[in-house]
Image 1 (cartoon, helix red, strand yellow):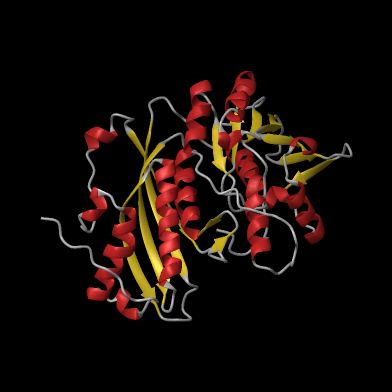
Image 2 (image 1 turned 60 degrees about the vertical axis):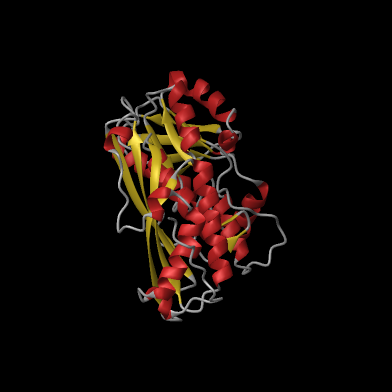
Length: 348
């Protein structure tokens, strides 16, 4: 016989919701189990349990990742901390070529948090997980005293299965490879900056937050030998490319005029003296693709909604220096270094 669903009557989070008693049980069963709604989570065990034989039908290797999300504000144009946590973790798995399967969800809640806000965030996580084809199967909840947190922090871990024959790594870039991004860069960093209200800019800016697992699999169908893929989150496209160059022992030359940047994002950068190549993204990847497959991969990406604005922005070149160069609009070259210090606080 099914147990009756517990109902959370509180309108704000209290310390009792993290104390392990009835209040915590009501919170978990109503807000989390009630929203995520799947048989694995409904067992309310201390762990999720998987059938290895079923997983191995997709491949013999697992990809496992974890990340924490502390974005400010927790809700912003086009998304919130919940969709960010799900999509960010899905993407960290996907760029290995793995097929994401399961996520965990760890919540750190501040005393006094509005339960209505928490419900919106959890609902957003469920919607993002359904869209990405993953299941949130286990979790944890902690409550910290008021003033010891900032509304809500989320940790998500994820497991995916790597198909046979896939070997994607930052160390695999080869001279002659083409560098591809799947669309306009810098949207997320600019949207978060504008959402804080510090600039008082009257512009429309939304996060690019989206899951990229289907796009990656589309790329691999066209070219199973894609050498390297990374999602360009903190540190942006520039950081990813610097990591590619260092790990692979190559240099990379970008063509500035080919880098897709939204005009409003470009304007924000000009006002603040920042570079969109360092702005955070939450729905953009950077790939190093063999030259003879680059056009086919680009066409396949552009046929997918997550890659409709994809572009080839540069190539891998031979050099005794492992660095990234940008050929500017004016014909000169500049070096793109790894980000030093902090460009934007708490963007994910």
